[in-house]
Length: 498
Ligand SMILES: Nc1ncnc2c1ncn2[C@@H]1O[C@H](COP(=O)(O)OP(=O)(O)O)[C@@H](O)[C@H]1O
Ligand SMILES: [Mg+2]
Image 1: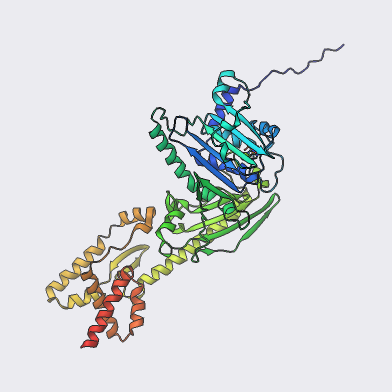
Image 2: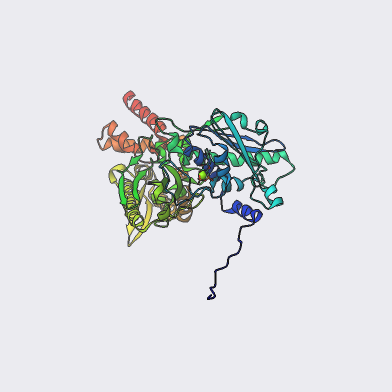
C-alpha cells in the first residue's frame, strides 16, 4: 500500500477565561453598550424598555427590562452563547443585531456578571454568565439559577419579556470599591450622560406614529431627540435623494438647522449636546432607522463654522453591512466608493448654500441704506472692518465739536476699528460663535444712538414704519429692540408735544 500523508490537526479551542475577558475590551462605552441591549429589545418587538438602576447599595446593578417576545430556555441558552447567530445569514428588516455577540460583549464591557431572565407564555427562565466563575473554571459554562424570584429587577418583567441584569459593575464604578456613595455618584453621572445618546439613537422608533418605543430611566420616560429639529418650522429640509445600489437603496436627505435666534436656548443646547453644534454637524447614518454614527463628514469635509447648521441623514438597510464595514458595536462604518462620490456632491452643495447665506449677510452689513456702524472693506484679497465715520451717531456728535477736537475724535474711532481683536474673535467664532453677542448698551448710549439715527432718517423724509424696519435690522438696535422702540415712541411724543 502506498504511503499516504494525511493532514493532521490539533485542538485550538480558545481558553475560555482569556477569550471572554478579551470580549470586554472591544471598545464599548456605557452608552453604546446600553444601546446594543436595547437593539435586541427592539428586534424582539418590545414597545417598552425600562432601565432600572440601584446604585447606592453594596451590590449596585443596572437592569434593562423589555416587553418583547421573550425566550424559551433553549433560546436563552443559545442567546448566551458568544456568536449565537451567523452574521452572514440575511436578517429580517427590523433586525438590529449583527454578530450574535452584542448581548455578551456589550454587557461584559460594563460588568462581570450578566444575568438574563426571560419570560414567554408564563414560563420564566434565567441564565448567568459570571466572569469570576469562568476565570476559576476556565470553562464555557453558564449557570441556570433556580431561585429566579430573588433576581434583582425581575419584578419589572411583565407577562412576556426579557430582563438583562448587570452586576459586579467594576468598569462603571470608576475603580471606587469601598465608598458606596461615591460609587453611586459616579455611576449615576455616567447614566445621566447616556440618556442623550439613547434619545438620539432610537429617536425614530420613539417618534413612530403607531406602537412607538418607550424608554424610561428609573421610572422617568425619556423623550426622543430629533437631530434635524423637523418640528421647528424654520428648519430647511432638502428633498430626499435615493441612490440605488445592488445591495439596496441608500436614502440621503440634507437639513439646515434654524439659526440659534430662531429657537429657544434649551432647544439649541439640546440639539448641540455637550460637544456643541460645531462638532455635531455632519452625516447622521441610520441602519434600519437606528442611528449608528453621527457628527462626522467621513473625512470628506472639515467641520467648519460655515457649515455648522448642516446635518445630512443617510439611511441604509441592514443588508449592506458588508459594504459599509459596520463593526460589532455598530458605532463605526466605512463608505462604499459609490456612496462616497454621491456624498461628496451633497457636501459641495451644502458649501455653496452656506456661502450664499453668508454673502447675503455680508451685503446687509455694507448696504448704505441701512446705516451700518461698520464697513466691510475688501482690498487685494484682504478683508477689513472699519467703523463708519459717516454714521449719524458719529457725524452728529462731531458736528458739536470744535474743529481741532473733531479730528481727534475721528482718530479715536478709527483706532478702535484698527484694533479689532481679530485673533480672539476668530478663536471664539470657530468654537461657540453663537455665544458671541454684541455688548449690551446702557440706556444713555442707546438713547443717543437711537436719537441721532432716527432724526437723520426723519430728515431724509422716511416714514416711521420704514425707519423702524431699517433700524430693526442692524445692531445695536436689533439686539435691544424693545428699548429702541420705546425710545423712538418717546421721541415721537416729544415732537408732537412741541
Ligand atoms: N431582549 C431580548 N429579547 C428576545 N431575544 C433576545 C433578547 N436579547 C437577545 N435575544 C436573543 O439573543 C440573540 C443574541 O443576541 P446578541 O448577542 O445581541 O446578538 P445579535 O443581536 O447580533 O443576534 C439574539 O439574536 C436574540 O435571538
Ligand atoms: Mg444584539
